[in-house]
Amino acid sequence: MPDRIVLEQENQIRKLINNPQKHYKLRQDKALFYQLCSSLDIIEDTEDAIAAYTEEDFGQDKSLLYLAVYGLLQAIYVQQDAVINLCEALGIKDDIHNYPKLNEIREIRNDTAGHPTKRDRKKGKPNSYHHISHITLNKSGFTLASYFSDGSNAQFRDIKTSELIIEQRKFISSILTTLINGLEAEEKAHKEKFRMEKLIEIFPETLGYDFEKLFEGISRDEYAELANNNLKNIMDVVNKFRDSVKRRNMDFYERLQDDFELIEYAAANLGKYFHGRNGVENLAAQIYAYFLQNKVDALKEYAKIIDDEYAK
Image 1 (cartoon, rainbow, N blue to C red):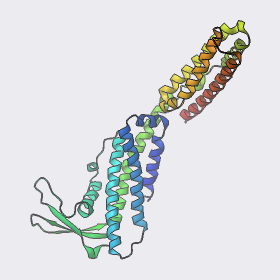
Image 2 (cartoon, one colour; image 1 turned 90 degrees about the vertical axis):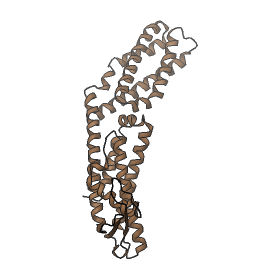
Image 3 (cartoon, helix red, strand yellow; image 1 turned 90 degrees about the horizontal axis):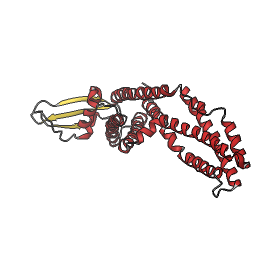
Image 4 (cartoon, rainbow, N blue to C red; image 1 turned 180 degrees about the vertical axis):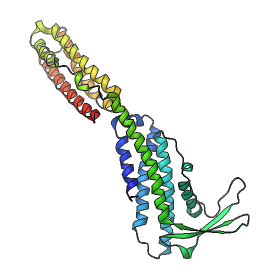
Protein backbone atom coordinates (compact mmCIF):
# COMPACT_ATOMS: atom_id res chain seq x y z
CA MET A 1 0.00 0.00 0.00
CA PRO A 2 1.43 3.43 -0.96
CA ASP A 3 2.89 5.33 1.98
CA ARG A 4 0.76 8.38 1.23
CA ILE A 5 -2.59 6.62 0.76
CA VAL A 6 -4.01 7.80 4.10
CA LEU A 7 -3.03 11.41 3.42
CA GLU A 8 -4.51 11.23 -0.08
CA GLN A 9 -7.76 9.83 1.28
CA GLU A 10 -7.91 12.40 4.08
CA ASN A 11 -7.50 15.14 1.48
CA GLN A 12 -10.23 13.58 -0.67
CA ILE A 13 -12.61 13.61 2.30
CA ARG A 14 -11.83 17.28 2.89
CA LYS A 15 -12.81 18.05 -0.69
CA LEU A 16 -16.04 16.09 -0.44
CA ILE A 17 -17.17 17.73 2.81
CA ASN A 18 -16.36 21.15 1.36
CA ASN A 19 -19.14 20.65 -1.15
CA PRO A 20 -21.27 23.72 -0.25
CA GLN A 21 -24.48 21.80 0.49
CA LYS A 22 -22.68 19.16 2.58
CA HIS A 23 -20.59 21.78 4.35
CA TYR A 24 -23.69 23.74 5.31
CA LYS A 25 -25.38 20.61 6.66
CA LEU A 26 -22.35 19.65 8.74
CA ARG A 27 -22.05 23.13 10.25
CA GLN A 28 -25.54 22.91 11.75
CA ASP A 29 -24.20 20.71 14.57
CA LYS A 30 -21.24 22.71 15.88
CA ALA A 31 -19.98 20.01 18.23
CA LEU A 32 -19.82 17.37 15.49
CA PHE A 33 -18.40 19.89 13.03
CA TYR A 34 -15.55 20.72 15.42
CA GLN A 35 -15.04 17.00 15.98
CA LEU A 36 -14.90 16.50 12.22
CA CYS A 37 -12.28 19.23 11.73
CA SER A 38 -10.19 18.00 14.65
CA SER A 39 -10.32 14.40 13.43
CA LEU A 40 -9.16 15.30 9.93
CA ASP A 41 -6.29 17.40 11.27
CA ILE A 42 -5.21 14.64 13.65
CA ILE A 43 -5.31 11.98 10.93
CA GLU A 44 -3.00 14.13 8.83
CA ASP A 45 -0.67 14.99 11.73
CA THR A 46 -0.35 11.42 12.98
CA GLU A 47 0.27 10.13 9.47
CA ASP A 48 3.11 12.65 9.18
CA ALA A 49 4.47 11.35 12.49
CA ILE A 50 4.24 7.73 11.32
CA ALA A 51 5.96 8.63 8.05
CA ALA A 52 8.72 10.40 9.98
CA TYR A 53 9.43 7.20 11.90
CA THR A 54 9.91 5.24 8.69
CA GLU A 55 12.09 7.93 7.09
CA GLU A 56 14.39 8.95 9.95
CA ASP A 57 17.62 7.21 10.90
CA PHE A 58 17.88 6.95 14.68
CA GLY A 59 21.14 5.03 14.64
CA GLN A 60 21.93 3.04 17.78
CA ASP A 61 21.03 5.76 20.27
CA LYS A 62 18.68 3.94 22.66
CA SER A 63 17.31 7.19 24.07
CA LEU A 64 16.20 8.34 20.62
CA LEU A 65 14.84 4.88 19.82
CA TYR A 66 12.70 4.82 22.96
CA LEU A 67 11.35 8.26 22.14
CA ALA A 68 10.69 7.23 18.53
CA VAL A 69 8.96 3.96 19.41
CA TYR A 70 6.81 5.52 22.13
CA GLY A 71 5.93 8.32 19.73
CA LEU A 72 5.09 5.91 16.91
CA LEU A 73 2.79 3.82 19.07
CA GLN A 74 1.06 6.89 20.44
CA ALA A 75 0.58 8.31 16.93
CA ILE A 76 -0.95 5.01 15.80
CA TYR A 77 -3.31 4.95 18.78
CA VAL A 78 -4.40 8.57 18.36
CA GLN A 79 -4.93 8.05 14.62
CA GLN A 80 -7.30 5.16 15.32
CA ASP A 81 -9.31 7.35 17.69
CA ALA A 82 -9.39 10.13 15.10
CA VAL A 83 -10.72 7.85 12.35
CA ILE A 84 -13.49 6.46 14.55
CA ASN A 85 -14.42 9.98 15.70
CA LEU A 86 -14.42 11.05 12.05
CA CYS A 87 -16.91 8.28 11.32
CA GLU A 88 -19.12 9.48 14.15
CA ALA A 89 -18.97 13.09 12.94
CA LEU A 90 -20.12 11.94 9.49
CA GLY A 91 -22.97 9.86 10.87
CA ILE A 92 -21.30 6.45 10.44
CA LYS A 93 -21.38 4.06 13.38
CA ASP A 94 -18.11 2.16 13.71
CA ASP A 95 -15.75 0.95 16.42
CA ILE A 96 -12.14 -0.17 16.63
CA HIS A 97 -13.36 -3.47 18.06
CA ASN A 98 -14.86 -4.18 14.63
CA TYR A 99 -11.27 -4.48 13.37
CA PRO A 100 -9.40 -7.17 15.33
CA LYS A 101 -6.02 -6.27 13.83
CA LEU A 102 -6.37 -2.60 14.77
CA ASN A 103 -7.47 -3.62 18.25
CA GLU A 104 -4.44 -5.90 18.50
CA ILE A 105 -2.16 -2.98 17.56
CA ARG A 106 -3.97 -0.89 20.15
CA GLU A 107 -3.26 -3.46 22.83
CA ILE A 108 0.42 -3.54 21.89
CA ARG A 109 0.51 0.23 22.38
CA ASN A 110 -1.22 -0.07 25.76
CA ASP A 111 1.20 -2.74 26.92
CA THR A 112 4.26 -0.91 25.62
CA ALA A 113 3.62 2.80 26.05
CA GLY A 114 0.12 3.26 27.43
CA HIS A 115 0.03 1.51 30.81
CA PRO A 116 3.05 -0.76 30.87
CA THR A 117 3.79 -0.75 34.60
CA LYS A 118 0.38 -2.08 35.63
CA ARG A 119 -2.48 -3.09 33.37
CA ASP A 120 -5.63 -3.83 35.33
CA ARG A 121 -7.52 -6.73 33.86
CA LYS A 122 -11.24 -7.29 34.19
CA LYS A 123 -13.33 -10.45 34.20
CA GLY A 124 -10.96 -12.40 36.42
CA LYS A 125 -7.86 -11.92 34.30
CA PRO A 126 -4.59 -11.18 36.14
CA ASN A 127 -2.93 -7.78 36.14
CA SER A 128 0.07 -7.52 33.85
CA TYR A 129 3.37 -5.65 33.83
CA HIS A 130 5.44 -4.89 30.73
CA HIS A 131 8.66 -3.40 29.47
CA ILE A 132 10.72 -3.25 26.31
CA SER A 133 13.79 -5.46 26.45
CA HIS A 134 16.47 -2.79 26.26
CA ILE A 135 19.01 -4.90 24.41
CA THR A 136 16.53 -5.83 21.63
CA LEU A 137 15.36 -2.31 20.84
CA ASN A 138 16.09 -1.06 17.32
CA LYS A 139 14.22 0.79 14.59
CA SER A 140 12.81 -2.46 13.17
CA GLY A 141 11.23 -3.49 16.45
CA PHE A 142 11.77 -4.85 19.93
CA THR A 143 10.92 -7.68 22.29
CA LEU A 144 8.15 -6.89 24.76
CA ALA A 145 8.43 -8.70 28.08
CA SER A 146 5.16 -9.29 30.00
CA TYR A 147 4.63 -10.63 33.53
CA PHE A 148 1.38 -11.53 35.32
CA SER A 149 0.05 -11.16 38.84
CA ASP A 150 -1.16 -14.77 39.04
CA GLY A 151 2.40 -16.08 38.60
CA SER A 152 1.78 -17.56 35.17
CA ASN A 153 4.70 -17.81 32.78
CA ALA A 154 6.19 -14.61 31.44
CA GLN A 155 5.63 -13.79 27.78
CA PHE A 156 8.15 -12.41 25.32
CA ARG A 157 6.67 -11.00 22.12
CA ASP A 158 8.68 -9.85 19.13
CA ILE A 159 7.09 -6.63 17.86
CA LYS A 160 7.92 -5.54 14.31
CA THR A 161 7.24 -1.82 13.89
CA SER A 162 7.12 -2.04 10.08
CA GLU A 163 4.37 -4.65 10.31
CA LEU A 164 2.38 -2.47 12.71
CA ILE A 165 2.59 0.44 10.28
CA ILE A 166 1.56 -1.69 7.29
CA GLU A 167 -1.44 -3.18 9.10
CA GLN A 168 -2.45 0.20 10.51
CA ARG A 169 -2.47 1.82 7.07
CA LYS A 170 -4.29 -1.12 5.54
CA PHE A 171 -7.27 -0.96 7.87
CA ILE A 172 -7.32 2.81 8.35
CA SER A 173 -7.38 3.14 4.56
CA SER A 174 -10.24 0.64 4.39
CA ILE A 175 -12.32 2.70 6.83
CA LEU A 176 -11.54 5.92 4.95
CA THR A 177 -12.53 4.23 1.68
CA THR A 178 -15.93 3.44 3.17
CA LEU A 179 -16.34 7.08 4.19
CA ILE A 180 -15.31 8.34 0.75
CA ASN A 181 -17.72 5.99 -1.01
CA GLY A 182 -20.54 7.14 1.25
CA LEU A 183 -19.81 10.82 0.70
CA GLU A 184 -19.54 10.36 -3.06
CA ALA A 185 -22.82 8.44 -3.17
CA GLU A 186 -24.53 11.18 -1.14
CA GLU A 187 -23.21 13.89 -3.45
CA LYS A 188 -24.26 11.94 -6.54
CA ALA A 189 -27.77 11.39 -5.16
CA HIS A 190 -28.14 15.10 -4.39
CA LYS A 191 -27.06 16.06 -7.90
CA GLU A 192 -29.36 13.48 -9.47
CA LYS A 193 -32.28 14.95 -7.55
CA PHE A 194 -31.85 18.33 -9.22
CA ARG A 195 -30.02 17.39 -12.44
CA MET A 196 -33.04 17.96 -14.68
CA GLU A 197 -34.15 21.13 -12.89
CA LYS A 198 -32.30 23.86 -14.80
CA LEU A 199 -32.03 27.12 -12.89
CA ILE A 200 -31.32 29.06 -16.08
CA GLU A 201 -34.84 28.20 -17.26
CA ILE A 202 -36.21 30.35 -14.43
CA PHE A 203 -35.07 33.41 -16.39
CA PRO A 204 -37.48 33.82 -19.35
CA GLU A 205 -36.55 35.43 -22.64
CA THR A 206 -39.18 38.09 -21.90
CA LEU A 207 -37.06 39.38 -19.01
CA GLY A 208 -35.29 41.81 -21.33
CA TYR A 209 -38.67 43.19 -22.38
CA ASP A 210 -39.64 43.66 -18.72
CA PHE A 211 -36.53 45.74 -18.08
CA GLU A 212 -37.13 47.76 -21.23
CA LYS A 213 -40.62 48.67 -20.02
CA LEU A 214 -39.25 49.33 -16.54
CA PHE A 215 -37.01 52.07 -17.91
CA GLU A 216 -39.87 53.45 -20.01
CA GLY A 217 -41.98 53.74 -16.88
CA ILE A 218 -39.22 55.78 -15.23
CA SER A 219 -38.86 58.16 -18.17
CA ARG A 220 -42.60 58.53 -18.89
CA ASP A 221 -45.15 58.83 -16.09
CA GLU A 222 -48.01 57.48 -18.23
CA TYR A 223 -46.24 54.11 -18.35
CA ALA A 224 -45.63 53.94 -14.61
CA GLU A 225 -48.49 51.58 -13.81
CA LEU A 226 -47.53 49.16 -16.58
CA ALA A 227 -43.89 49.37 -15.52
CA ASN A 228 -44.88 48.37 -11.99
CA ASN A 229 -46.36 45.17 -13.45
CA ASN A 230 -43.07 44.51 -15.23
CA LEU A 231 -41.28 45.07 -11.91
CA LYS A 232 -43.49 42.39 -10.37
CA ASN A 233 -42.54 39.99 -13.19
CA ILE A 234 -38.87 40.62 -12.53
CA MET A 235 -39.23 40.07 -8.80
CA ASP A 236 -41.22 36.88 -9.40
CA VAL A 237 -38.19 35.56 -11.29
CA VAL A 238 -35.81 36.64 -8.51
CA ASN A 239 -37.96 34.99 -5.83
CA LYS A 240 -38.33 31.79 -7.83
CA PHE A 241 -34.57 31.62 -8.25
CA ARG A 242 -34.05 32.28 -4.55
CA ASP A 243 -36.47 29.49 -3.57
CA SER A 244 -34.86 27.05 -6.00
CA VAL A 245 -31.35 27.78 -4.70
CA LYS A 246 -32.56 27.38 -1.12
CA ARG A 247 -33.89 23.90 -1.85
CA ARG A 248 -30.68 22.63 -3.35
CA ASN A 249 -27.82 24.62 -1.83
CA MET A 250 -28.33 26.33 1.54
CA ASP A 251 -24.71 27.43 1.72
CA PHE A 252 -24.95 29.34 -1.54
CA TYR A 253 -28.38 30.61 -0.56
CA GLU A 254 -26.99 32.16 2.62
CA ARG A 255 -24.10 33.74 0.74
CA LEU A 256 -26.60 35.43 -1.59
CA GLN A 257 -28.62 36.99 1.21
CA ASP A 258 -26.89 40.37 0.95
CA ASP A 259 -27.58 40.43 -2.80
CA PHE A 260 -31.22 39.54 -2.29
CA GLU A 261 -31.57 42.24 0.38
CA LEU A 262 -30.15 44.87 -1.98
CA ILE A 263 -32.38 43.68 -4.81
CA GLU A 264 -35.45 43.96 -2.60
CA TYR A 265 -34.42 47.44 -1.50
CA ALA A 266 -34.03 48.61 -5.10
CA ALA A 267 -37.34 47.02 -6.10
CA ALA A 268 -39.18 48.56 -3.14
CA ASN A 269 -37.97 52.04 -4.07
CA LEU A 270 -38.90 51.52 -7.71
CA GLY A 271 -42.36 50.49 -6.51
CA LYS A 272 -42.61 53.74 -4.56
CA TYR A 273 -41.60 55.68 -7.65
CA PHE A 274 -44.25 54.02 -9.80
CA HIS A 275 -46.90 54.77 -7.15
CA GLY A 276 -46.50 58.54 -7.22
CA ARG A 277 -42.74 58.73 -6.62
CA ASN A 278 -43.17 58.96 -2.79
CA GLY A 279 -39.90 60.82 -2.28
CA VAL A 280 -37.91 58.83 -4.85
CA GLU A 281 -36.35 61.11 -7.44
CA ASN A 282 -36.14 60.22 -11.12
CA LEU A 283 -32.35 59.92 -11.10
CA ALA A 284 -32.48 57.62 -8.09
CA ALA A 285 -35.11 55.48 -9.82
CA GLN A 286 -32.82 55.10 -12.84
CA ILE A 287 -29.96 54.05 -10.58
CA TYR A 288 -32.18 51.48 -8.84
CA ALA A 289 -33.29 50.10 -12.20
CA TYR A 290 -29.74 49.76 -13.55
CA PHE A 291 -28.65 48.17 -10.28
CA LEU A 292 -31.55 45.71 -10.41
CA GLN A 293 -30.75 44.78 -14.00
CA ASN A 294 -27.09 44.14 -13.18
CA LYS A 295 -27.98 42.02 -10.15
CA VAL A 296 -30.45 39.91 -12.11
CA ASP A 297 -27.80 39.38 -14.82
CA ALA A 298 -25.45 38.20 -12.06
CA LEU A 299 -28.09 35.75 -10.80
CA LYS A 300 -28.37 34.35 -14.33
CA GLU A 301 -24.63 33.73 -14.36
CA TYR A 302 -24.88 31.97 -11.00
CA ALA A 303 -27.67 29.84 -12.44
CA LYS A 304 -25.43 28.75 -15.34
CA ILE A 305 -22.57 27.89 -12.98
CA ILE A 306 -24.82 25.81 -10.72
CA ASP A 307 -26.44 24.04 -13.68
CA ASP A 308 -22.99 23.14 -15.05
CA GLU A 309 -21.95 21.79 -11.65
CA TYR A 310 -25.04 19.62 -11.34
CA ALA A 311 -24.62 18.32 -14.88
CA LYS A 312 -21.26 16.70 -14.04
